[in-house]
Length: 152
Image (cartoon, rainbow, N blue to C red; front, side):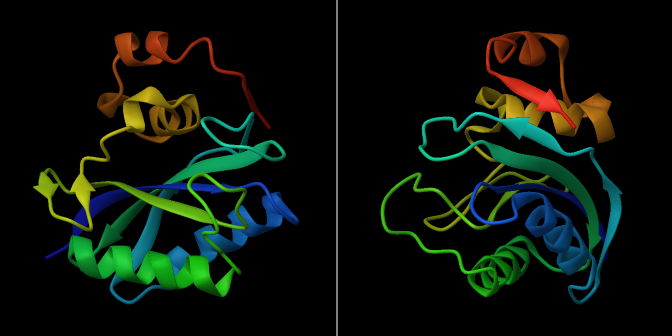
């Protein structure tokens, strides 16, 4: 069975634009998975983080992987891109966040779905609204309107 999943993609080290584009291609190459839609790229200031501006996007995936298998595959892609986690919210070569996996809700020690902080982040809500407007309310967009973000 295939479900629609949404993944937030971000990077702020190295060639962040190229990294985000490569990550979308890598998500499309995962087993039982294809990218059904991808947002434009966005530039945003670090949110609760430090370092250079981020390049962000959101991808919609049609996947046969369950949520934990998809998360594991995404974490492997982060490692392959040189992701290190020296401290919370450190600058990163690649950050992949599973936002939703089908219509299900999940709360385990390793994964909470829908992503618990997605509605607080303009760099998630604007690209998500671009490819799945039915998932984002005007109130949610208004709540993040003060965060600096630019569509590229």
